[in-house]
Length: 179
Image 1: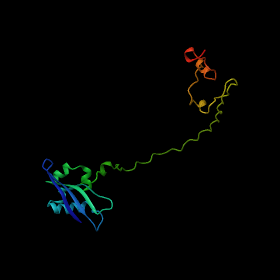
Image 2: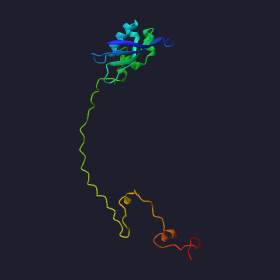
Image 3: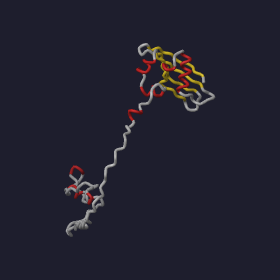
Image 4: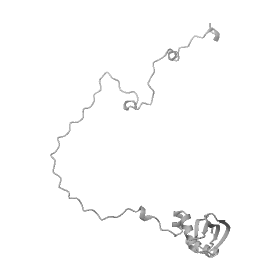
């Protein structure tokens, strides 16, 4: 594993140096974040607890990994400035599983259950009466209409224009060339 520092930017406001690095790992798999932190701390002459890798990724099919790392002036500044999930990834903080895990309590004593009293059998319910349609009403013409879902709008009364469209030819006015 060979690490090259591609870029070094000092950031005095956040009390850190920001590094862009490249790891060549031709004979092995992508190195772990912890292994890269160890090698990077040797390269920049800083303790490992002040080196935090923000991101690290390899392109598919290559043996080259690029990433970003931050080297802080003190470990206290590193822990207070860096986001929590990045600290967890770098192994500097434990995952907050205790806060999200449900508390385990001693199981409560089971309540005494009394035997249910047998209820007398209920009389069979009368079947619902079927609604008989009066003979004078017509059934719906379309399948969905009887269920309250009509796919056609209500029919409007016929107008004289609609009667003319049924095959009757309107008379031509004298302006149109009629008699």
